[in-house]
Length: 133
Image (cartoon, rainbow, N blue to C red):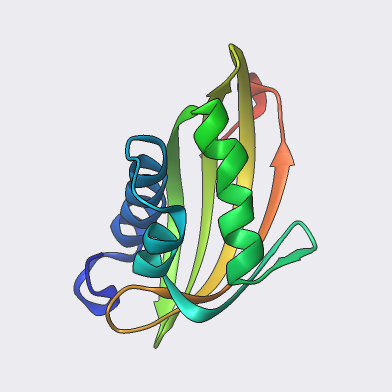
């Protein structure tokens, strides 16, 4: 992963999510190794109110690997303050021949080497035609 401090915030967060997803779905490497490359051992993420530590995050990768969804993230805005980033984006996902569009609000803390230490994500599924930049 690229160092957190060397990138434009919009580019950093888009690249972080894209490369983590791509490694999970396009590799047979152990999911724990991939998770550890992108997250600290003490990672805690809250996704729509659900708490995930390292073990739960690894378990969450199983259905992703099985279903192999495709997608792209469009980051509309992102700001950094020290080791923290806040971003607003739209995620477009195709999963089992079904298209989903989600507004994503992300607040995270990263290490200087680009690994996530804490993350809070709120999402809302929306019809594609209502998405605005």
